[in-house]
Image 1 (tube, one colour):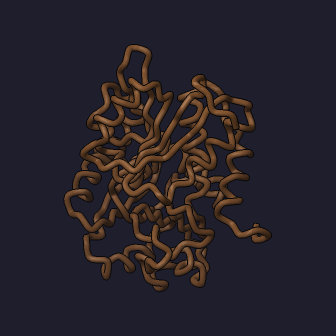
Image 2: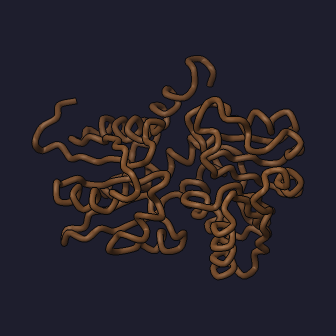
Image 3: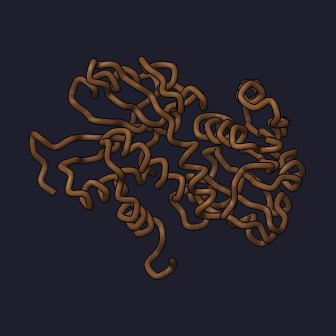
Length: 291
């Protein structure tokens, strides 16, 4: 592509950021649609996020995604909160408004629902759900599942305060959903997991290829659904642990795709080229000939 003074610039910020595939999919959509635009990635510590976003707005950036561990920092710092972010208590999509203000959106919930249906043919309604990881995207997905009619959500996290805060939020947005805590001790999680229909892995465990599964094989059962938000490997550690038990598994590549497409629409007012984005992501993650 040709880069000029007219090229529109977008970016993703995270800490760390080396794992991200967002530039691959967004640049594929820009190219497919013939847009003069470029999407970049920057490592950004949480303490510097809001200063960086305000500077990026002044420099003419057209839109920014934020990822781990910046989503709640962005929620607290932006000038305006879209309803999607207000519901989930986190921001993953930053929109620079014409008057100089910064608006925060969340596309994680919609991206998750679309990916869950596409990858596993499932929907949270009437399900018992085990949510491993209660911050950022996990928080957004838990709230989305409650609003979508989940019967029960069991929360697990290494931080008690995150579980307690999310439990209170879920009770407020969906009084009809039973919300339980599995505790902060990983050795206690397996028993709670086996009694649920859907396991959502929303913790950072698994981002390194050497990470073990956060749950042991005995945590899973036949016909259970397991969705790991980690997306950079064809089979993540928790998927590898769950598959022998007969569980149906999916990584987070579909969620990345669909939440990214919704961000694209917010920024540009155009429909993203989903297939171009999908092909770019699959080429990056799946070895040739394995699909």
